[in-house]
Length: 489
Image 1 (cartoon, rainbow, N blue to C red):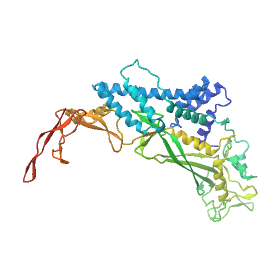
Image 2: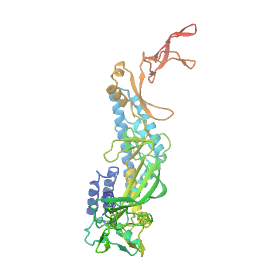
Image 3: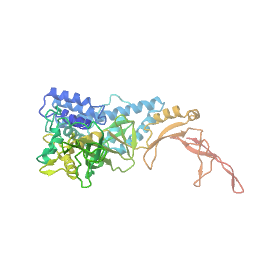
């Protein structure tokens, strides 16, 4: 029988088969897919639900892409309005609020997909300019975004809608085929490994498990689009990220007893031994030991990132993580069967079993779906949970910084400074900083040297400049008193 991961993936493929199915069947499949959320939290389930709605309406791919484009535009518009309202609640003027949000928009969209960046920025600024006028609702043409969304729709449809309908329905192991010892060919053995029937029995006594050497193959790199952050929300407009991939296969062999199951010649020791390390006999014959095996195929993938961005990922039951690169893997295991004695008139050896498991990745379990394709599909599901952002960014708006300073730093609140979300011009990340108001001290720089004390000094807030009020004094070339500067218009 397939293990839990294999069961979930197989169910995903069968549940999302829309071809040659009634609307009722499609609905049941999506409802069943939704029940897999606790196990597949990285998959974008809302997209599959929308896909079902498109099927009900019989919409063409172009119409679906237009809806996805509109959804993205509406999400951007909603985030801009939320940010604007939050800024006004901080008693900022409409002009200051717009300037603050404009900076945040330009910063966030630096991480957008190049094919969408200019269009997203233009649209966001149009929304910002009309944020005070609820009557303005101009329809903006977004051809580049539409084209990208068209590919997203086709990719999702391909992921959910394989050409063949594979229904996963395990059956009882009444045929005892998992105990078979002689196979006419490797193809027959591989077909048994991906069978939907139950696995062979477990070893109930002391047992030994060993693994064959891994066979690792480097796959071609895959470029996929990820989400990005925009004013605190996630939107499907991130850049295309290249993922390097490796597939590793191995056989896992379990046998009765604690004596080594693999001999120095690479064959299997198929008979039981006693405590004296001698073979146990019955009626003059060696007593066979029970040996079973299954194949394990793992797809390892990681990002090759460049630039200042990083990744956030919600895993199953995990907290939010931020990292410069992202590494993960997905695994499929075959059902467990008794170790054959002969395959294609050849005695089964360790090397043969390792090669069979390497071929397992190309084995079909339905008309067109192979184990390799299933691994790729699961990888795409995991990648759909990634969000591209700058890992050092801690804010998007000034209001968020005000809330943070008021909550975490009461002493700063008492000084009455202005909290700002400031972008680092070199590394392009944003963090909270305090800015000096009119009358507060600021740093005095003269001839590239700081002549003020540095105590309780701040960079002057927007619209203010640092003016020197008191000169520094020197005695015998040593500083006697510091200069003093204050923020003023």
